Image (cartoon, rainbow, N blue to C red):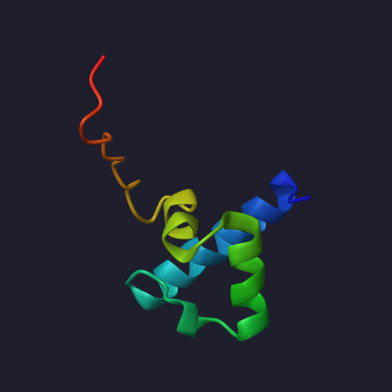
Length: 68
């Protein structure tokens, strides 16, 4: 189970790396164990950056052909 504390840790780690590098952090900026933990706590890399508020959320497309 991913606790709020673990999520907060991963988000803060991403924000700190962003400040340090002056760009969006990449998986290669972390050792493999840390990268794996971030992804386990926050999801795939783009979603992790969104959770840390470093990247705007991707807009969801509406299904084509469905009308109500």
